[in-house]
Image (cartoon, rainbow, N blue to C red; front, side, top):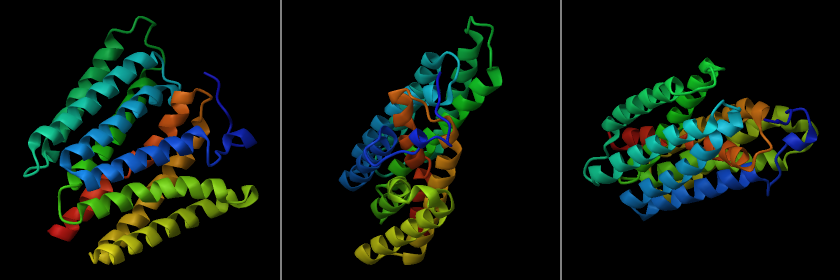
Length: 259
């Protein structure tokens, strides 16, 4: 799998490049789903999760990417099913750990049936496990949606990394490395404050959510920037991963607000 070095100009995404479009579209789906309702939120995360599952192993250059994609897609369907069938009175997040455990078992089974000598076994398992964590975090945002101010928490947690993606593209190239972190944190804080003013909610919880979500987004972008692939599906998953990874912060925020 050919990759682009982070030091090359082509590695820097533009506003209309696949990583940014993937992240922004996924964020829009999840946020709109959170405002639309419990089930819609789960289906929105599922749609983003299936696109992520398709490209994630290609982004990381994992061996036998089709098998890994199947494992991740099955886990995404299972997590969405937990949220949907739990109903609006019970978010079902306590069962996500069961789906994660099943996903890990499937990941090991996938390695057992490989016929290529199981090359890069550790990398393959680690990549699949990290993908499962990203999917679970994204589904936690769907679990947060039905609670009081849960939709605002989702908007902050998912929106901050998406805006950080766009901000990275607009920064001057020579200052991008040193400005990316403070700008991403600032964007998250501003978004958290704006949502708290709009909803009249707990400004401290939403501000902290935006701050941490901005940090999570920029940290994951820094890590994945080294592996940006030329494959379109892999590039889409780069952007989707950076927004779904912060989804669990929405659940934490609504818990803090409603505790």
